[in-house]
Length: 328
Image (tube, rainbow, N blue to C red; front, side, top):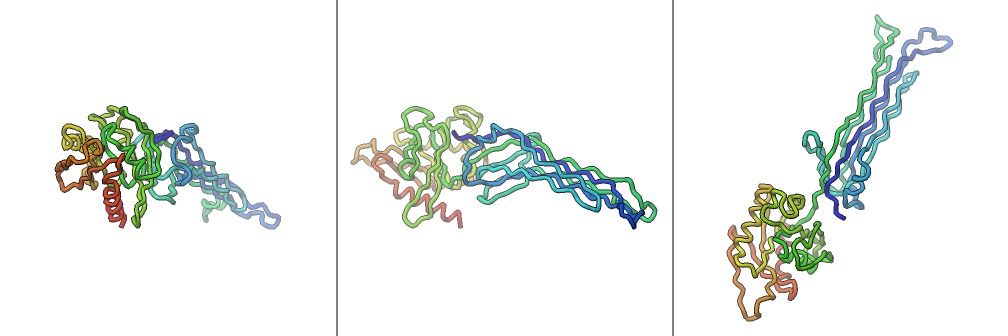
């Protein structure tokens, strides 16, 4: 099961209290104040874990609380710091403050480790309040509370190439042909109910990740069909490959509908490199020439068939070349 959202509450540890204490030694009756400081409260930390690929575990444990710092002691001894809580999350997790919508962390690197909620500062002991006019201060400071807030976690797939198309355009079939992924394939709308990832390798090109995004329909940016929950997965892909059924009445119009849905969801989509692949060309007789429409903006267009594998070699090579250029 692919889980891409979770709501949790994080509470960092409270700082330990400072203490009031005075030296009590046989030959130092007026030894002065020696109250130590309280320890710092523990932090709540998110760390990317390559062995975690969903947020499902966070759905069953919704409150994470770090330990409080210990109180100070006499003889100027500071209290121990509270233990941190480290939460393992998958690569690509975004953490937002649910109350304000502020993005607190965007864990897009394989070694990312971010303090989400900071522990409270420990309070000062009475040692800090001694002065020439007050040599026996009976004042100390309490520890500060740690940060606490509800978080909305989102997981966006990190893929190089995102497959975009209406239901039954052939996205899952293409992914199964050019990678070792085995997505569910059937002849009915929304066969793909969750994003599928596949690793594509070709010759000397660097491997790249291809994502089969569930089918889009008109109005998807407003939540229609499978909704915009899957459109967010396209946001981080570097290249968009539009799959258009070659047997449809107006391929250019189909492309324009898809492009508009992406634009309405996010203007970022407009700037991404785009290619178009006309799928299911094996349906046409071998001697019939397939007309390649002009999709505008100098977009590279390929006629492909996952059944006969026509055009796949050229398409994969072009995609791999673009990804390599973008990674430089």
